Image 1 (cartoon, rainbow, N blue to C red):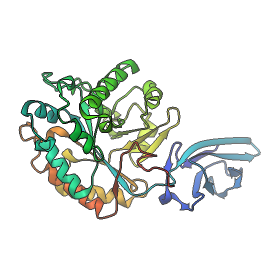
Image 2 (image 1 turned 90 degrees about the vertical axis):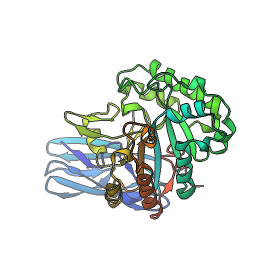
Image 3 (image 1 turned 30 degrees about the horizontal axis):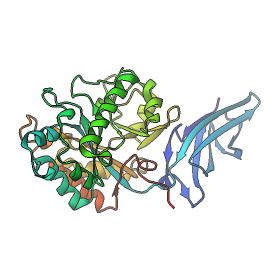
Image 4 (image 1 turned 180 degrees about the vertical axis):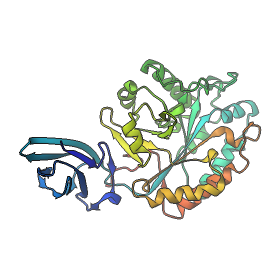
Length: 362
Protein backbone atom coordinates (compact mmCIF):
# COMPACT_ATOMS: atom_id res chain seq x y z
CA UNK A 1 0.00 0.00 0.00
CA UNK A 2 1.16 3.54 -0.75
CA UNK A 3 -0.66 6.77 0.01
CA UNK A 4 0.09 10.43 -0.61
CA UNK A 5 -0.85 12.36 2.52
CA UNK A 6 0.14 15.86 1.33
CA UNK A 7 -1.14 17.42 -0.86
CA UNK A 8 -4.79 16.45 -0.60
CA UNK A 9 -6.64 15.51 -3.77
CA UNK A 10 -8.14 18.74 -5.11
CA UNK A 11 -5.80 21.00 -3.12
CA UNK A 12 -5.46 24.58 -4.39
CA UNK A 13 -1.82 25.57 -4.01
CA UNK A 14 -0.12 28.94 -4.33
CA UNK A 15 3.22 30.64 -3.65
CA UNK A 16 2.78 30.10 0.10
CA UNK A 17 2.98 26.33 -0.39
CA UNK A 18 6.38 26.02 -2.06
CA UNK A 19 8.99 27.78 -4.17
CA UNK A 20 7.41 29.65 -7.06
CA UNK A 21 9.03 30.98 -10.23
CA UNK A 22 7.52 32.30 -13.43
CA UNK A 23 7.29 28.76 -14.77
CA UNK A 24 6.72 26.45 -11.80
CA UNK A 25 5.72 25.92 -8.20
CA UNK A 26 7.89 23.32 -6.48
CA UNK A 27 6.10 21.59 -3.62
CA UNK A 28 7.02 18.82 -1.22
CA UNK A 29 4.92 15.70 -1.61
CA UNK A 30 4.76 13.45 1.46
CA UNK A 31 3.18 10.09 2.15
CA UNK A 32 3.52 6.58 3.53
CA UNK A 33 4.64 3.33 1.88
CA UNK A 34 6.08 -0.05 2.97
CA UNK A 35 9.53 0.35 4.51
CA UNK A 36 11.27 -1.84 1.98
CA UNK A 37 9.76 -0.27 -1.13
CA UNK A 38 11.43 2.12 -3.54
CA UNK A 39 9.19 5.15 -4.01
CA UNK A 40 9.09 7.54 -6.91
CA UNK A 41 6.83 10.57 -7.28
CA UNK A 42 6.17 11.56 -10.88
CA UNK A 43 9.36 9.69 -11.69
CA UNK A 44 11.48 11.45 -9.06
CA UNK A 45 13.12 9.20 -6.47
CA UNK A 46 11.69 9.98 -3.02
CA UNK A 47 13.61 10.21 0.24
CA UNK A 48 12.60 7.52 2.75
CA UNK A 49 12.36 7.83 6.54
CA UNK A 50 10.88 4.58 7.80
CA UNK A 51 7.41 4.20 6.32
CA UNK A 52 7.35 7.87 5.34
CA UNK A 53 8.54 9.39 2.07
CA UNK A 54 8.91 12.85 0.60
CA UNK A 55 9.93 14.32 -2.74
CA UNK A 56 10.07 17.82 -4.23
CA UNK A 57 7.88 18.02 -7.34
CA UNK A 58 7.47 20.95 -9.76
CA UNK A 59 3.99 21.98 -10.87
CA UNK A 60 4.03 23.66 -14.27
CA UNK A 61 0.34 23.72 -15.23
CA UNK A 62 -2.96 24.83 -13.73
CA UNK A 63 -3.80 21.25 -12.82
CA UNK A 64 -1.34 18.42 -12.27
CA UNK A 65 -1.67 14.74 -11.49
CA UNK A 66 0.83 13.56 -8.89
CA UNK A 67 1.47 9.82 -8.85
CA UNK A 68 3.53 8.06 -6.21
CA UNK A 69 4.68 4.52 -7.05
CA UNK A 70 6.09 1.90 -4.67
CA UNK A 71 8.16 -1.03 -5.97
CA UNK A 72 9.43 -3.88 -3.82
CA UNK A 73 9.30 -7.57 -3.05
CA UNK A 74 5.55 -7.32 -2.54
CA UNK A 75 5.06 -5.97 -6.07
CA UNK A 76 4.03 -2.50 -7.22
CA UNK A 77 1.38 -0.06 -6.07
CA UNK A 78 0.54 3.53 -6.81
CA UNK A 79 -1.57 6.42 -5.57
CA UNK A 80 -2.55 9.52 -7.53
CA UNK A 81 -3.88 12.91 -6.47
CA UNK A 82 -4.65 15.91 -8.63
CA UNK A 83 -3.96 19.50 -7.57
CA UNK A 84 -4.35 23.09 -8.76
CA UNK A 85 -1.58 25.65 -9.06
CA UNK A 86 -3.10 29.07 -8.38
CA UNK A 87 -0.24 30.70 -10.24
CA UNK A 88 -1.46 34.29 -10.19
CA UNK A 89 -2.68 34.24 -6.62
CA UNK A 90 -2.43 37.36 -4.48
CA UNK A 91 -3.79 38.42 -1.08
CA UNK A 92 -7.47 39.15 -1.63
CA UNK A 93 -10.92 39.10 -0.09
CA UNK A 94 -14.50 38.98 -1.19
CA UNK A 95 -17.60 40.21 0.64
CA UNK A 96 -21.01 38.61 0.25
CA UNK A 97 -24.27 39.50 1.95
CA UNK A 98 -26.96 36.83 2.21
CA UNK A 99 -30.76 36.97 2.51
CA UNK A 100 -31.35 40.24 0.65
CA UNK A 101 -34.91 41.39 0.03
CA UNK A 102 -35.68 44.08 2.61
CA UNK A 103 -33.81 46.88 0.80
CA UNK A 104 -35.73 46.25 -2.42
CA UNK A 105 -39.03 46.27 -0.57
CA UNK A 106 -37.93 49.52 1.07
CA UNK A 107 -37.18 51.11 -2.31
CA UNK A 108 -40.52 49.90 -3.64
CA UNK A 109 -42.53 51.39 -0.75
CA UNK A 110 -40.52 54.53 0.01
CA UNK A 111 -39.88 55.45 -3.63
CA UNK A 112 -36.54 57.05 -2.77
CA UNK A 113 -35.11 59.42 -5.35
CA UNK A 114 -31.72 57.75 -5.02
CA UNK A 115 -30.94 54.16 -4.11
CA UNK A 116 -28.53 55.60 -1.55
CA UNK A 117 -31.37 57.23 0.32
CA UNK A 118 -31.90 53.66 1.53
CA UNK A 119 -30.51 53.12 5.04
CA UNK A 120 -28.94 49.85 3.90
CA UNK A 121 -27.42 50.91 0.58
CA UNK A 122 -26.12 54.15 2.07
CA UNK A 123 -24.10 52.10 4.58
CA UNK A 124 -22.71 49.89 1.84
CA UNK A 125 -21.70 52.92 -0.21
CA UNK A 126 -19.94 54.49 2.78
CA UNK A 127 -17.98 51.25 3.24
CA UNK A 128 -17.12 51.14 -0.44
CA UNK A 129 -16.02 54.78 -0.49
CA UNK A 130 -13.69 54.22 2.46
CA UNK A 131 -12.27 50.78 1.67
CA UNK A 132 -13.02 50.08 -2.00
CA UNK A 133 -14.95 46.96 -1.01
CA UNK A 134 -17.09 45.16 -3.60
CA UNK A 135 -20.40 43.69 -2.42
CA UNK A 136 -22.28 40.70 -3.78
CA UNK A 137 -25.91 40.80 -2.63
CA UNK A 138 -27.54 37.36 -2.61
CA UNK A 139 -31.26 37.84 -3.25
CA UNK A 140 -34.46 36.08 -2.29
CA UNK A 141 -37.19 36.24 -4.90
CA UNK A 142 -39.72 37.19 -2.26
CA UNK A 143 -39.84 38.37 1.33
CA UNK A 144 -40.64 35.96 4.21
CA UNK A 145 -44.13 37.48 4.52
CA UNK A 146 -44.58 36.91 0.77
CA UNK A 147 -46.14 40.36 0.32
CA UNK A 148 -43.32 41.57 -1.94
CA UNK A 149 -41.38 39.88 -4.72
CA UNK A 150 -38.89 40.92 -7.36
CA UNK A 151 -41.50 41.10 -10.13
CA UNK A 152 -42.97 44.13 -8.28
CA UNK A 153 -39.67 46.01 -8.36
CA UNK A 154 -39.82 48.92 -10.87
CA UNK A 155 -36.86 49.80 -13.09
CA UNK A 156 -36.90 53.37 -11.72
CA UNK A 157 -33.33 53.04 -10.39
CA UNK A 158 -31.92 50.92 -13.20
CA UNK A 159 -29.41 53.54 -14.31
CA UNK A 160 -28.19 54.05 -10.73
CA UNK A 161 -27.66 50.33 -10.25
CA UNK A 162 -25.79 50.15 -13.56
CA UNK A 163 -23.59 53.13 -12.64
CA UNK A 164 -22.53 51.39 -9.41
CA UNK A 165 -22.15 47.87 -10.77
CA UNK A 166 -18.36 48.10 -10.52
CA UNK A 167 -18.77 47.48 -6.77
CA UNK A 168 -22.42 46.52 -6.16
CA UNK A 169 -23.91 43.42 -7.80
CA UNK A 170 -26.75 41.00 -7.14
CA UNK A 171 -27.43 37.33 -7.66
CA UNK A 172 -29.61 34.29 -6.86
CA UNK A 173 -29.76 32.97 -3.32
CA UNK A 174 -33.15 31.24 -2.97
CA UNK A 175 -36.84 31.69 -3.66
CA UNK A 176 -37.54 32.71 -0.06
CA UNK A 177 -35.99 32.57 3.39
CA UNK A 178 -38.21 29.63 4.34
CA UNK A 179 -38.19 26.67 4.28
CA UNK A 180 -34.66 26.06 5.54
CA UNK A 181 -32.23 24.20 3.27
CA UNK A 182 -34.50 24.53 0.21
CA UNK A 183 -32.05 22.92 -2.21
CA UNK A 184 -30.52 20.18 -0.06
CA UNK A 185 -32.40 17.47 -1.96
CA UNK A 186 -33.78 19.56 -4.82
CA UNK A 187 -33.57 18.56 -8.46
CA UNK A 188 -31.68 20.73 -10.90
CA UNK A 189 -35.00 21.75 -12.48
CA UNK A 190 -36.05 23.43 -9.23
CA UNK A 191 -32.63 25.03 -8.74
CA UNK A 192 -32.55 26.32 -12.31
CA UNK A 193 -36.10 27.66 -12.13
CA UNK A 194 -35.29 29.86 -9.12
CA UNK A 195 -31.86 30.79 -10.50
CA UNK A 196 -33.30 31.96 -13.83
CA UNK A 197 -36.25 33.73 -12.26
CA UNK A 198 -34.01 35.87 -10.03
CA UNK A 199 -31.49 36.43 -12.85
CA UNK A 200 -34.19 37.71 -15.19
CA UNK A 201 -35.66 40.08 -12.62
CA UNK A 202 -32.27 41.55 -11.66
CA UNK A 203 -31.45 42.21 -15.31
CA UNK A 204 -34.87 43.81 -15.80
CA UNK A 205 -34.81 46.27 -12.90
CA UNK A 206 -31.05 46.78 -12.45
CA UNK A 207 -29.44 45.87 -15.78
CA UNK A 208 -27.27 42.96 -16.89
CA UNK A 209 -24.26 44.80 -15.45
CA UNK A 210 -25.70 44.35 -11.95
CA UNK A 211 -25.93 40.56 -12.21
CA UNK A 212 -23.09 38.40 -10.93
CA UNK A 213 -22.77 34.62 -11.00
CA UNK A 214 -23.85 33.15 -7.63
CA UNK A 215 -21.35 31.71 -5.17
CA UNK A 216 -23.52 30.97 -2.12
CA UNK A 217 -26.71 28.93 -1.95
CA UNK A 218 -29.18 29.52 0.87
CA UNK A 219 -28.05 27.33 3.81
CA UNK A 220 -25.09 26.15 1.71
CA UNK A 221 -26.70 22.85 0.77
CA UNK A 222 -27.07 21.31 -2.70
CA UNK A 223 -27.38 17.77 -3.93
CA UNK A 224 -24.05 16.92 -5.65
CA UNK A 225 -25.99 15.70 -8.69
CA UNK A 226 -26.63 19.34 -9.67
CA UNK A 227 -22.98 20.47 -9.56
CA UNK A 228 -22.13 19.77 -13.20
CA UNK A 229 -25.24 21.48 -14.52
CA UNK A 230 -24.65 24.51 -12.32
CA UNK A 231 -21.07 24.69 -13.58
CA UNK A 232 -22.44 24.66 -17.14
CA UNK A 233 -24.45 27.78 -16.22
CA UNK A 234 -21.24 29.55 -15.23
CA UNK A 235 -21.00 28.73 -11.51
CA UNK A 236 -17.28 28.10 -10.94
CA UNK A 237 -17.05 28.58 -7.17
CA UNK A 238 -19.29 27.99 -4.14
CA UNK A 239 -18.62 29.12 -0.59
CA UNK A 240 -19.64 27.36 2.62
CA UNK A 241 -18.87 27.02 6.33
CA UNK A 242 -17.61 23.40 6.46
CA UNK A 243 -17.91 23.17 10.23
CA UNK A 244 -19.01 20.12 12.19
CA UNK A 245 -22.28 20.39 14.07
CA UNK A 246 -22.92 17.23 16.07
CA UNK A 247 -22.98 14.36 13.56
CA UNK A 248 -22.44 16.20 10.28
CA UNK A 249 -20.76 19.12 8.60
CA UNK A 250 -23.12 22.01 7.94
CA UNK A 251 -23.24 24.49 5.05
CA UNK A 252 -21.10 22.00 3.16
CA UNK A 253 -22.92 21.28 -0.13
CA UNK A 254 -23.13 17.58 0.54
CA UNK A 255 -19.38 17.02 0.23
CA UNK A 256 -18.02 13.86 1.82
CA UNK A 257 -16.60 14.00 5.33
CA UNK A 258 -12.95 13.77 4.27
CA UNK A 259 -13.22 16.87 2.09
CA UNK A 260 -15.24 18.74 4.70
CA UNK A 261 -12.58 17.99 7.30
CA UNK A 262 -9.93 19.27 4.89
CA UNK A 263 -11.90 22.44 4.28
CA UNK A 264 -12.02 23.22 8.00
CA UNK A 265 -8.32 24.10 7.69
CA UNK A 266 -7.95 25.32 4.08
CA UNK A 267 -9.17 28.07 1.78
CA UNK A 268 -10.36 25.98 -1.14
CA UNK A 269 -10.69 22.62 -2.82
CA UNK A 270 -11.41 21.70 -6.42
CA UNK A 271 -14.19 19.25 -7.15
CA UNK A 272 -12.76 17.56 -10.22
CA UNK A 273 -16.00 15.85 -11.20
CA UNK A 274 -17.78 19.19 -11.76
CA UNK A 275 -15.08 21.84 -12.12
CA UNK A 276 -16.47 23.82 -9.18
CA UNK A 277 -14.02 25.13 -6.58
CA UNK A 278 -15.39 25.13 -3.03
CA UNK A 279 -14.16 27.85 -0.68
CA UNK A 280 -14.54 28.38 3.04
CA UNK A 281 -16.21 31.35 4.70
CA UNK A 282 -13.71 32.77 7.20
CA UNK A 283 -15.92 35.10 9.19
CA UNK A 284 -19.67 35.68 9.55
CA UNK A 285 -19.88 39.29 10.69
CA UNK A 286 -23.35 39.23 12.23
CA UNK A 287 -22.28 36.32 14.47
CA UNK A 288 -18.92 37.80 15.47
CA UNK A 289 -18.60 40.30 18.35
CA UNK A 290 -16.45 43.27 17.39
CA UNK A 291 -13.66 42.33 19.80
CA UNK A 292 -13.27 38.96 18.05
CA UNK A 293 -13.06 40.23 14.47
CA UNK A 294 -9.33 40.96 14.43
CA UNK A 295 -8.30 37.83 16.38
CA UNK A 296 -10.18 35.66 13.88
CA UNK A 297 -8.53 37.41 10.93
CA UNK A 298 -5.12 37.28 12.62
CA UNK A 299 -5.44 33.51 12.89
CA UNK A 300 -6.39 33.20 9.23
CA UNK A 301 -3.49 35.34 8.03
CA UNK A 302 -0.96 33.48 10.18
CA UNK A 303 -1.70 30.16 8.45
CA UNK A 304 -0.37 29.67 4.89
CA UNK A 305 -3.32 27.38 4.14
CA UNK A 306 -5.85 30.13 4.88
CA UNK A 307 -3.96 33.40 4.46
CA UNK A 308 -4.22 34.07 0.74
CA UNK A 309 -7.99 34.37 0.37
CA UNK A 310 -10.40 35.79 2.97
CA UNK A 311 -14.14 35.30 2.64
CA UNK A 312 -16.43 37.73 4.48
CA UNK A 313 -20.11 36.97 4.93
CA UNK A 314 -22.99 38.67 6.66
CA UNK A 315 -26.78 38.90 6.32
CA UNK A 316 -28.89 41.88 5.29
CA UNK A 317 -31.43 41.77 8.10
CA UNK A 318 -28.87 42.68 10.77
CA UNK A 319 -28.43 46.14 9.21
CA UNK A 320 -32.06 47.11 9.88
CA UNK A 321 -33.09 48.60 13.30
CA UNK A 322 -36.62 47.21 12.97
CA UNK A 323 -35.32 43.64 12.72
CA UNK A 324 -35.91 41.74 15.97
CA UNK A 325 -32.26 40.61 16.07
CA UNK A 326 -30.72 43.92 14.92
CA UNK A 327 -26.97 44.28 15.59
CA UNK A 328 -26.31 47.95 16.52
CA UNK A 329 -22.55 47.80 15.85
CA UNK A 330 -22.88 45.76 12.65
CA UNK A 331 -21.30 48.40 10.41
CA UNK A 332 -18.45 48.93 12.88
CA UNK A 333 -17.69 45.22 12.85
CA UNK A 334 -17.41 45.36 9.06
CA UNK A 335 -15.22 48.47 9.22
CA UNK A 336 -12.91 46.74 11.70
CA UNK A 337 -12.40 43.74 9.44
CA UNK A 338 -12.00 45.72 6.23
CA UNK A 339 -9.54 48.14 7.79
CA UNK A 340 -7.42 45.28 9.10
CA UNK A 341 -7.19 43.60 5.69
CA UNK A 342 -6.78 46.82 3.69
CA UNK A 343 -3.84 47.89 5.85
CA UNK A 344 -2.20 44.56 5.04
CA UNK A 345 -2.54 44.90 1.29
CA UNK A 346 -5.58 42.68 0.65
CA UNK A 347 -7.66 43.66 -2.38
CA UNK A 348 -11.40 43.19 -3.00
CA UNK A 349 -12.38 40.83 -5.82
CA UNK A 350 -15.32 39.30 -7.63
CA UNK A 351 -14.82 35.60 -6.98
CA UNK A 352 -16.15 34.67 -10.42
CA UNK A 353 -13.47 36.54 -12.36
CA UNK A 354 -10.50 34.42 -13.35
CA UNK A 355 -9.66 31.78 -10.77
CA UNK A 356 -11.08 32.71 -7.36
CA UNK A 357 -11.09 36.37 -8.27
CA UNK A 358 -7.69 36.64 -9.98
CA UNK A 359 -7.58 36.82 -13.79
CA UNK A 360 -4.50 35.46 -15.53
CA UNK A 361 -1.67 38.00 -15.76
CA UNK A 362 -0.94 39.42 -19.19
